[in-house]
Length: 282
Ligand SMILES: Nc1ncnc2c1ncn2[C@@H]1O[C@H](COP(=O)(O)OP(=O)(O)OP(=O)(O)O)[C@@H](O)[C@H]1O
Ligand SMILES: [Mg+2]
Image (cartoon, rainbow, N blue to C red; front, side, top):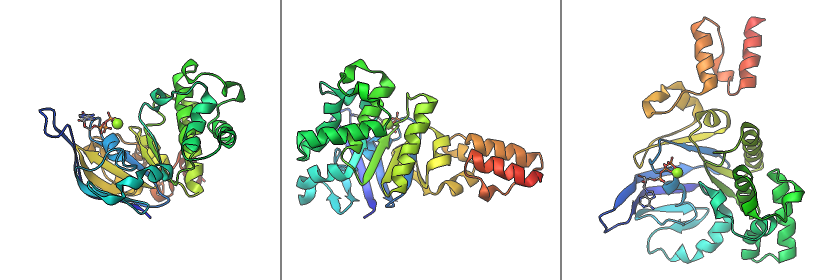
């Protein structure tokens, strides 16, 4: 049931002077149950890529297979994409601008209602999901236009969680959140991932990749330049891919240069690093 891209090309505004080839021959696999991060500089095609996952954009050439759905131009199964959108939940970049109902609870309940859940039950689901993302009860009947940007982002995430998707696709979901909010939401995604949800996570934050990803896809100018696991990516000089070295990795490198005999294979987080320093110093 994994996700497979086969020779996917995507061109915006085809047959116009504004034609832009945003994806060029992308072939990749996203494994079931993984926490896959997608990285690469601005404009390299990350958002274009993830919008192929629920059929919002259809490949100009090539095909995408997601959970048994085959997405290809002229494919007969394109009619069933409505059902696919329940299985693949996408939280878009700038999702906070997509809230539109009168109250926050109605906004979150919109998805389940759209998929046939009765209003009363949908509101109950909405309350659970709002609690999950840390929105207090006193907000439920507020207008989504009267809350802060970070709160809107959480409401948008709750709206997707309300569909209980098997695959959760997040396009820079922590952009604009404060450090505490970021950690809260990241730990939520980590927990969902532990419970079996596949997470596809677009980010510019290399430290998130270091600490959370099980798999990583590096893009450049519409192409996938690398698909690997974080351990392998960070064993290389990542700056050659225009990526930054994660903070923990930088610290490890400095300590190694000072002669500290750290076992690098044991370090995947700040806690690991502290444990490893304590072990070496004993
Ligand atoms: N609707 C559109 N029409 C024409 N070109 C577009 C459109 N949307 C995106 N593009 C172009 O396609 C390319 C890929 O855009 P995309 O939004 O996928 O990049 P991205 O990697 O998500 O960037 P960012 O990190 O800034 O979000 C860019 O060059 C962009 O200008
Ligand atoms: Mg983007």
